Image (tube, rainbow, N blue to C red; front, side, top):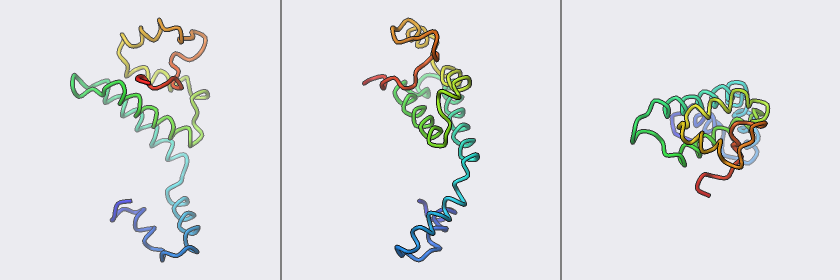
Length: 130
């Protein structure tokens, strides 16, 4: 937590006692735990990551491993808020695919793991360099 932020000031407003710990958690959740807003924030961050990578050129483009890790972390954050891959595949897969190169998608489609009846990509696959 960074000094000077609203979250830091909220925590600092309570004396540091074990009795105040549940109170701080409750206040923190009430002020910063709106699931709808958090879902919108994480979805926007995922879209921003995709858009930045699509418009990047050369050395500014994220390496595949870094892109995979960042996308996976955003998807995990969304899943923790109740947005799961299965129920949102209609928008999630095209968004993720849009930042991949055409040749990478072709390689994926030729893979034995590609399932034409299921989602176009499986974000539950092992890390690209595992």
